[in-house]
Amino acid sequence: MNRQQRSDMIEIQPRAFLSGTVEYINSQWVFFDEETEEAALMDEFIHQEIELLRKDKWRKGFLLEDGSIQTGKETLVLQDQERIKVRKQLVYSLERLLDELNDEAFVQFINILNSFNFSIYDCIYCYNHMTFLDQGLRRFGVNFLIFDNEELISNVQHHFDYGETAADRFEFTLSNGKRAVIEKIS
Image 1: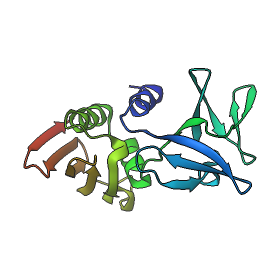
Image 2: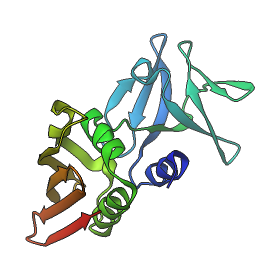
Image 3: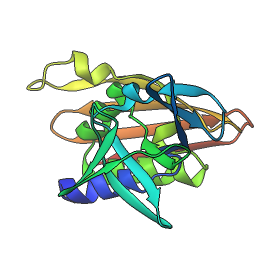
């Protein structure tokens, strides 16, 4: 699996976007989340991926400092009451953890997480012990992750042992009592 395939798998995750509308209030662009009805200044999303609904078509680009969106060669100016989607940012320690996983462990982790109706974008906490260990030596320990999809909470323990072989064990425990364990040794 190459880097692009991993990116594609991450990109299609559920709940990867905040959806809502924008309004121009007091000389500032304000984003209103359609799910939570919370307001946020668009300045918080500068240089992030934005999708803009224009003429019944989603246009993808990046938010610029002046409130416009750069879509390839074209620059679009926001309009009042326009619908947009803002790509959520992954928890940094989770992003690093996903980068460290080998391909099979990466796919298995994402698939089981999705099978329980969770997305990597539902991560509210990630302790990545691997970031504190030296790359060249045998690395082993446990990472702790918590996910919240607004219906259930899931706790994930990732036991890892990377030496001559690589062993990954993921233990999922959901707030409704369901559990799953997957293990990959290579």
